[in-house]
Image (cartoon, rainbow, N blue to C red; front, top):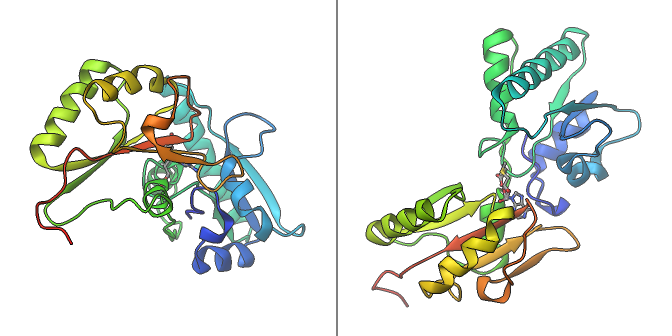
Length: 236
Ligand SMILES: C[S@@+](CC[C@H](N)C(=O)[O-])C[C@H]1O[C@@H](n2cnc3c(N)ncnc32)[C@H](O)[C@@H]1O
């Protein structure tokens, strides 16, 4: 289930009900002993009587350890159910958008095809950023492309050209370490003022402002950018 990007008020009623009725609450952690972002967001609804099940998903580029982690998570969840426990897996943001939940779902389908699974959507960071910044995401014939920030300046340049030609708004995730070169590239094209920078939405250190206000230093992993290069001609 998706728990939204940070603000516990953005959990859906369906998500809260599912947590309350679960015997086991599973959640991703990036390292052994870590708290986990999704567990922190939903913490207020996890009762001491409930079994907590951290599932380790190492954030590494290699395919092997990631596959092993997805398989292990699927097996752990299936084992909980086999032991008669209702289990929920918490997931940051929405459960289907660049989400651990999707990999676990695919692993479950493959390894435990008879296991009943229900997905509960959550508020994505993109939707939360647009709402918090009063920033219309897509209007009329505009497209909306949500994707990780490219690794190379040339790829971002090509993407911006494509988006301008197609009338797409861009939502660039995983901005983090790329911000030092993304910023000057956008500045050169006069795109900083109209772009919205959102960092750690829903957390006490949230930062939400025009991209022009953010210096070129490293941004945290939980940061994103909304970029619009033009507006439809018919507007109020
Ligand atoms: C693996 S994706 C997960 C997306 C998530 N499933 C969703 O629906 O929002 C992680 C990226 O989403 C963005 N993100 C997620 N939560 C965020 C938050 N609270 N504030 C800003 N960006 C966030 C960041 O760009 C981060 O690098």
